[in-house]
Amino acid sequence: MVGNDIIDIELAKSQSNWTRARYLDKLFTKEEQEYIITATNPSIMVWALWSMKEAAYKLYTQLHPSRFYNPKSFNCKLQQPHQVIYKDFHCYVNTQITSDYILSEARLDNCDMNSMVIEFQTQASQSHSQILHEKLIDVMSNRSHYDRTPLVLQKDSFGIPKIKYGQEEINISLSHHGRFGSYTFI
Amino acid sequence: MTKDDLIAKLKIIVAPYVQDEAAFKTLSEDTDFVSDLKINSANLVDIILDIEDEFDIRLENEDMEQMLDVKSAMAIVTAKLNG
Image 1 (tube, rainbow over the protein chains, first blue to last red):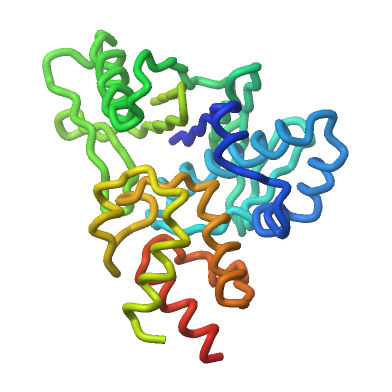
Image 2: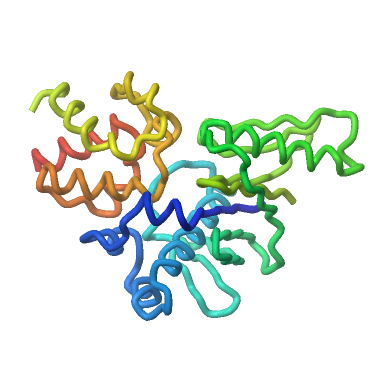
């Protein structure tokens, strides 16, 4: 199982004002707020922590199908290797930060990042989710062990996506924001 | 405050964060902030802060947990106002 989350840094700047009153306190623990305040680039730290929480939430809801909004309870630990802890659940998170995007991937084991990034060629954000689905299916179909039987993307009642391959179910994670999309499967 | 008044106030609050205008036009109690209105999850906290300011209430983490649709937002605001 795997959860990922990508953030378009430029879009995050215009979509969210994390300096507004009570914003940080709603989303981040005291420890995380300390990471933010002491960071060389607090804005990047805000979105790196946010993407870690989102990726961990996506992994958690694959294990425990559900849907809720409680980002503050997903505690980011920035000692190496980075981890996110929620109640008795914990996972490892890899985060990649470029000048354009921040990408986090959460896994139950400590391993390398698997997520691929695409840059959308069209501004029409309504089409981005579809483009990302098609790209994922295209890439998976080209793996030799997935030939012939069609790969079908399905979402359960909680909105958690999976790929159905005959009787088999493959865990995946998809994320898109602004100019960027990311997909991963194991 | 009537149900309709509350929906009308919530509609004004969520408007700046909506990414799907068609779903916004037909907003009802059953509208989901994320799957229908395509509101970015980082903006849900803005909606929560705006609700706190508008109704002069404070929402705890547990209140926020189910704040994913209009119906839940209405229930939480009503409970807080009557609390």
